[in-house]
Image: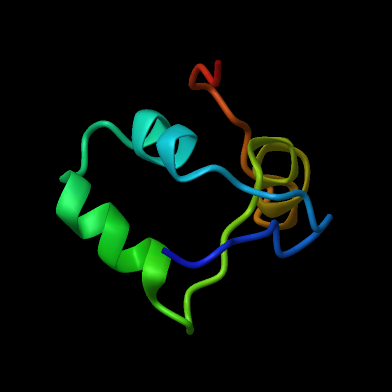
Length: 64
């Protein structure tokens, strides 16, 4: 497995947490994404504060 870091802030991301937060997708699919060199990820904080703000959207879900 490759190490992944938030595209915006550089925080190290955890595969287990990524799978837990995306429970609605298959584990195999998520691992494929995680290992793909062209896919970048955001930590939950940056996703809520930056990505959604750029699209004028509001986060209405629950991130633990």
